[in-house]
Length: 495
Image 1 (cartoon, rainbow, N blue to C red):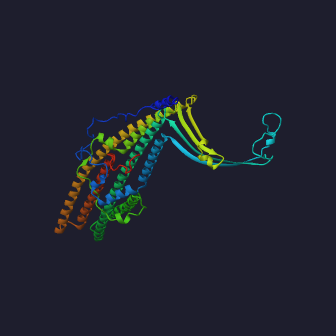
Image 2 (image 1 turned 30 degrees about the vertical axis):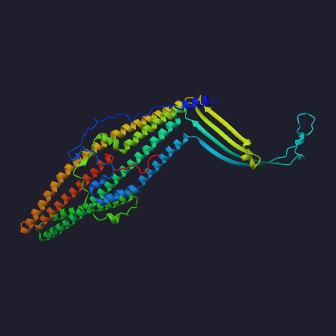
Image 3 (image 1 turned 45 degrees about the horizontal axis):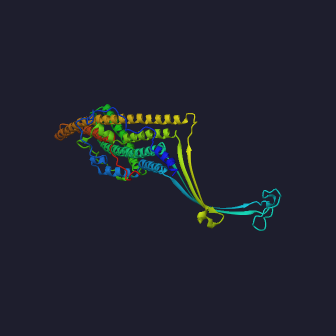
C-alpha cells in the first residue's frame, strides 16, 4: 500500500502532453465560400464534380479506358507510392506498440570449468592455519578444476511511463504521416491518369496528322506531275515547277518527325502501363478518332477543389505531423520514467527452475533527466519549430499553386474552345470551296491543277482542325488534373 502514492504520481503526470495541439491548417487567401472560379466560361458548369475517379470515361473511348486501368494496376510509380504507404502504416503500428509494456521470456544454461583452488590456503578465520571442515568428505586437490552447472528461467518486463506525452505526440506524428502517404498515393494516381490520357490523345493526333500529310503529299505529287507536263508543252514556267517541287519536299519532310512522334508516344504508353516499349504497337497502330470532350464540364468551386486535391491534403498532413514533432522535442527536455521488473527461477540443477523456493524478483523504477545538456534540447525544439513553419509555408504554397493551376486550365480550355469553333468554320468553308471547284472541273471551267490545289487547302484545314481538337482534349485532361480528379481511396484501411 505504501507504493500506491509512488505509482499514482507518475500516472497522473502521464496525462500531461507537451507541445502545441494541432488546430487545423492555416487560413489561406481565397474567395468567399461557394464563389466560382474567376476564369470560368460558358463551357464549364459550377455544379459539383460527380466523382473523383474515372473522369476519362467522359471521353467515351474504350481503348483509353483500358489503358487507364492497366496503368493504375501496373505502373511502377503507383507501386512505389503503395510501398511508401505500407511503410508509413507499419511505422504507425510500431509507434503505437511502443506505448505499451514490453516483456521477454528467456531460458539459459551455463556450464563452466573453473581452475582449481587451494582450499588448504584458506582458513576458517581463527588464524591457526587449519583447513576448515567443508563437510564434503575428501578435499579438492590443488590444481584440480571445478565443474559448475547453472540453469535459469526468467521473465522480464519494462514500460516507459509517458510522463510528458512524448510517445503520444510520436503516435500523432506517425498517424499524420500515414494519412499523408495515402494522399501521396492518390496524387500519384492523378498524375498518372492525366499522363496516360495526354499521351493517348497525342498519339491519335499524330496518327491523324500523318495520314492527312500523306494524302496532301500524294495530291501535291499529282499537281507536280501535271505541272511538269504543262512545262514540257511550254504553257508554264520552270519557276512554277520548282515552286510545286518545293512544296512536295516540305510535305515529305513533315512525315519523318510525325512517324518518330507516333513511335515515341507508343513507347510512352507502353511504359506507363508497365510494359516494355513496343508492347502496344499492334493494339494501337490503327488510327482512331481523337476523343472529344463532353459538351459541358462540371468544375465545382475553389472550396471543393482545396478539399479534393490530394497534394493539398498531403501538405496539410505534413503540417500536422511536423506540429506533433514539436511536442516530441519539447517532451524530450523533461524527465523520463521507466518501470522494469524481473522474475526468475534457477539453480545448479534442472529441477531448480520449477522450484518456487528459488524464485527471484526484482523491481527497478528508473528516472532519467538530462539536466546539463548545454542547450541541446532547446535547439532540437527550435529545429522542430522551424520544420513546422516550413511545412506551413509549403501548405500555403500548395493552396495557391492549386488555385492557379485550376484558373490557368480554365482559361486555356475556354480559349481553345473558341479557337476550335473558328477552325470548324474554316474547315466547313474549305469543304464548300472544294465542292464548288469539283463542280467547275466537271463542267470544264476549271483545271485539274486548280481542283487539286483547292483539295490540298481543304486537307490543310483538316490538319489544323485535328491539331485544335487534340489541343482541346489535352486542355480538358489538364483541367481534370488541376481539379484533383483521377484517384481512388486505398483498399486497405489505415490501422
